[in-house]
Structure formats: structure tokens, C-alpha cells
Image (tube, rainbow, N blue to C red; front, top):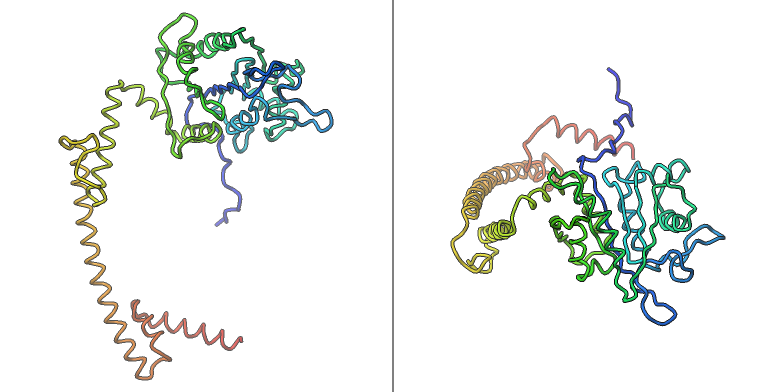
Length: 374
């Protein structure tokens, strides 16, 4: 019979668990820059010296990566990386959109282009450096990285940015109408999140150039409170790879707002039923302030009662077995005290288990060998 060689485990598949592709839309206000007049100049600046990051001529790294909050952007993009490949196959593209620039990474092309040059990791210098080189026209189209400069209106309103949303992101959303969920568009913000004043414009822009009704935007609440975009994006991508994100989205799309509220009330009622059955609920009221319990909650309470009865039967059976072991321990201790063994401790240990003479002799023989060896 052949022995199985170590390391013969089949190679881990890098294919996503779902054919649904993910498109990441990263929104950044970048309002931390000020012009010579002292006024804020929002947006990511890549073409103006002193207002954005720059490439270091000596080491090839990136200087001032904090400008425009691109340090947070590159961290979020690196959440799209994968073991065994540069980027997750389920993520199609990552687009940074700000009032003054759009930087788009086609991750499949970008990863292939980096692999051809021997780059194995997407570092800060690789991610931001590619954006800077694309802005200066040094990168070819085959790299998968593109830069589109945008203008800001005299009053500071980012109209060009919303026009890009309408033609690019809106076109993607419009092409998916009437079909199943084949693509997911994840909208994340910078360290301060997506501003409230942008949310309505974003929903309208995703309606497309023809002004069609905006697609449903589903807000996602993740555990742990307020999070930066990088861990939030990583959690969503992991949910997608485990096959759990798409069913949640499909369930939400199938429910109206009223049905979704009723679903949430039912979930809370079931949780309170568990707490009441375990004796941990503060009072007997329901989650919505009163009313009859839901049928699902009553069913949970019935199952808990059956579960509690089963535990009681198991505890009773366990106490009977423990009593029998105690009797055996007492008899063994009596024989040890009569002179058949060295002491009561070993007798009680043997008595707690079924008595097997062969096993006891083997243990004594092993102890004698150890003593002779010493």
C-alpha cells in the first residue's frame, strides 16, 4: 500500500464562489487641501506640484501619500488582494472618484501587467505610483490604470464628477436592469465616509444619462461601529467569497420597504423569544412595545422548552454514572489501604475509570522501565 506523500494536497482554487463580479466605487472629498488664497481646494490633485503626492526620484517611492487621503485609498484597494494572486478574481475594477480626478484600476489587467514585470505585491508605492504615472502619461493603456482630470465649478461644486458618475457608473447600473444580480457596485467613502450631501446626487447619477429611476441603494451596517473604508470593504469581499453577500442582497431586493421593516421586527421578536426562554429578558414585552407574539417566536419558545427537557434528562443520566464511579473509587481505595498499592491517590484515579487489569499492568511496566533507566 502506497503511503500518501506529504504536500500532495491539490492546489487551492482561486476562483470566486460566485460568478457575480464586484465593482468598487471609492468616493473621496479630499477637502484637506488649501490654495494660495487660503480657501479649501477639494479633490485629489495629481497634476499640481505641492498639492498631491509625488514620486521620489531617488528611491522610486511615493512622498506625501497622505495628501488627498490617498494613503487610505491604497489601503482600501489592497483589501482587493488575494493569496496566490495579486487581486481577487471576483473584483473587476476599483475606481477612485473625487471632484478633481478619477483614477480607475482594472484589477485583472493591472494584476497581469504587474506580474509580467515580476511584481508580486501591491504596495503603497505600486498603487499610488501607478496613479501618478498614469496622470503624467507614462503608463500604457495595457496597464489597466487610467486617470481622468476633472474641473471644479467656480462656486466649488463638483459638477464634472457627477457627470462622470452618470456616464460611467450610471451606465453600469443601467445595463444591469431587468436581469439577475450579475454585478455588485460597492460604494465606499474615505475616512469620513460618503457625505450626506453627496448621497442624493449619487443615487440620481446612478440612474444613467436617460434620467431613469435610480437603482435601489442598499445601506450596509457592519458590526463594530464606525469603520474606515478598508476593513469595511474587506468584510464585504469576504462575505462575497463565502457565498453569503449575494443571498443577502437578493433577499433585500425582493422585499419592499414595508416588508423589510416587518422582517426586521420578526428578527427582533425571535431574539427576544430566545432571551425570555433563557430567563435573560428584562421584561415580557415584545420588541415593538407590546402586542401578540409572532408565530415564529412561539415556535422558538416551544423548541427551547424541548431542548431544556433534553438537557435535564442528560444531566440525570450523567449523575447516575457519576454515582457508580464514586462507588468504584471507594472500593479501590479500600484495596489500596489493605496493602495492594502504594497509596489512595492512584486508587481513586483508577476507580474513576472502568477497571482494566491489562492496562494497569502495562502502566506499571512502563513506570518500572522509566525508573530503571534513571
